[in-house]
Image 1 (cartoon, rainbow over the protein chains, first blue to last red):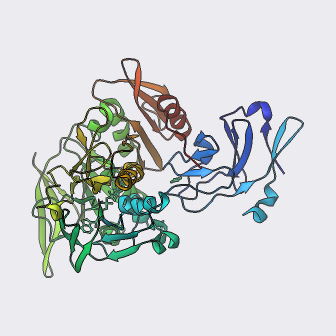
Image 2: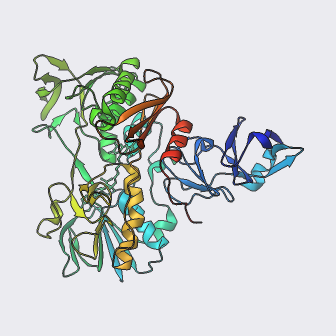
Image 3: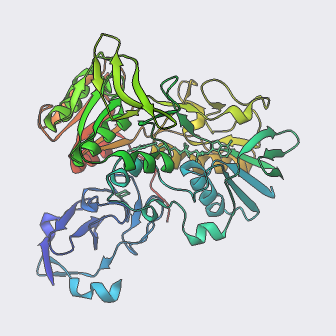
Amino acid sequence: MLRACTVDELPPGESVRIAGPEPIAVFNADGELYAISDTCTHQDASLADGWLEGCFVECPLHAALFDLRTGMPSCLPAKQPVRTYPVLVDDGVIYVRAEAAEDAA
Amino acid sequence: MKTVAIVGASLAGARTAQELRAQGFDGRVVLIGEEPHLPYDRPPLSKAFLAGTASRESLELLDSDDLGALELRLGTRAERLDAAAGRLVLSDGEIAADGIVVATGGRARRLPGTESVRGVHVLRTLDDASALREELVPGVQVVVVGGGFIGAEVASTCRTLGLDVTVLEALETPLVRVLGPQLAQACARLHERHGTTLRCHAAVDGLDTRADGAGRRVTGVRLASGGTLPADVVVTGIGMVPATEWLSGSGLAAAGGVPTSAGLVTELPNVVAVGDVAACASAETGRPQRHEHWTNASEQAPVAVANLLAGHLVREYRPSGYVWSDQYSGTLQLAGHPEPGDELVVTEGTASDEAFAATFRRDGRTTAVFALNLPRAFTRLRRQAFRRPAPVA
Ligand SMILES: Cc1cc2nc3c(=O)[nH]c(=O)nc-3n(C[C@H](O)[C@H](O)[C@H](O)COP(=O)(O)OP(=O)(O)OC[C@H]3O[C@@H](n4cnc5c(N)ncnc54)[C@H](O)[C@@H]3O)c2cc1C
Ligand code: FES
């Protein structure tokens, strides 16, 4: 379980990157929390720097769109999905269940 | 509509093929490309692919699902279009099609008279990139003619490979027409900072060559102002010419590309044009404009397809003006349409830093957003300045 930040630190429309062996990006999409692998599958841009629109994030580099719910890209240049991770909130703190990564992928 | 033939099997053509299916077209899609290769992405040709860190496979634009949904005619050139008869003459036959997509992009411009000189390169195709890469061996001296995006990227890749490189630019600063004087200066400094020699106001007079086996090989670049720069490898990044020769006689081509409406439809309602070749009328001013950038080709495809399938104008193209360029382990990003005389406001850092962000303003309105090495700031500024319709799931 990885600690992201507190709920207060991640208002709607914001994102945070959790460092680690595989960096993870956590988004607050209009109150709904999502966590995906931070590295775009096209090249190596950080999706936490991306443009959040509804439950899609647009890669800051070449504008591939990823669906935060499924990790699927909905347009080129990305073709591979990013991993998604379960998010939990406990006592006002946001956690990401990273060990589930292999199963979820 | 039963058959759509797409001429040009690169980004704009590949995206159009995908969009045809995505928008429900279930007829025959024929994608015709004169290059023998499966459709590939060009930006890495001056960057990771040229540096040897990205593989050929990583350039693929279409996956097996995409390929399964179309008929691919590679190594086949379109030679003539008889649109009224719905007939396309190919180098190896003919095709009858009721919808035609012109996606032939452009060809790299060369220095006149240098076509057969060894050591002199342009960079547009995979074959160009492979040929250039083979010559970028330790110890060679490289001269890049043209300091635009491609020239700057090649110079940067050459530095990564540890080579000696000089960039020759005809203007007072590279990219000044795109970025304005202040930002262009900031980008020009990247060259110096990373050990590339940049010479501005430098016009090329000709090349020095020596006999080399059967032909000639470059040894130096002569400058109009006098003097010669020794060179083992010369790369010219001096722009491209729209590939419209095959349209002569069809009434569709003009010198500056294929003119289209703001919906990317040509004079003929069943022919659309997309990507680098399309001179699309601005939805605001009506003036035709070509955009030679990746995002443009990618974003025009859905608009052109919607209008082609509907048979009338249902969508207009609004260019985001988004361009990126990777140089010296940094990324430049620009969105919007800066014009000469716009006020430049640096919002993060200063223009002499390795990383900064800036906006262009006119009459209290943001006309463009720029960042060097600050993708997050760029994203925010762009979001504030330009709204886009939300994507649909
Ligand atoms: C080296 C390089 C680096 C780049 N880097 C960037 C970047 O960092 N950022 C950015 O925004 N943009 C970049 N670009 C620009 C971007 O790649 C182009 O805008 C994009 O490729 C345009 O796609 P297109 O399909 O319209 O044209 P093209 O990619 O030119 O493709 C046209 C295709 O049509 C084929 N064709 C032409 N005539 C015929 C015919 N008669 N019959 C059959 N086939 C034909 C050609 O062989 C070609 O394959 C770069 C371009 C190059 C060359
Ligand atoms: S790195 Fe994300 S789209 Fe290219």
